[in-house]
Length: 205
Image (cartoon, rainbow, N blue to C red; front, side, top):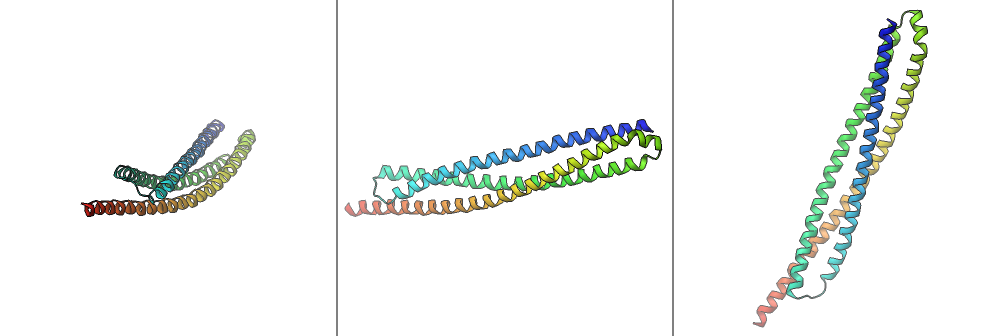
């Protein structure tokens, strides 16, 4: 009987170690997402800078070659913005789904570990076995409590970071929408300039 209980305890300890490793992988994945977010911010800043330059330049008269070049540049910016919006939306959905999945897995695993420990306590009916396994059970409970406390802290941090990520993502979406609107206005202005120049050439003829 003591041998069986010893094996069960060893198996539980292995499960705890494996689960801690999985938890570290989850944290690492969230750090990677944060790095991707920073990269997207850099791209957004770059697009914002080029958009400002492009909008200001449309107020001056240019020859046909310059207007055509600027039109192509504006189309490229619009395409880049569309891709950025799509990427941001997909990544936000992935983060939300991953967070919910990880949270459910953590809670389910914690309940499973608690149930296993309760069963082990019920199985230890013999006084001799209880004496031999008392220290190991105590150590296992300490490790379990520490693990649950650590997991709780990680969950709280993940929830806080997710809330910040979501808020920041919404702000970025608004900024991108505003930039996209400005680009559309700029594109309309370019079309009007081309039309006016074309009408001017026809009038001269």
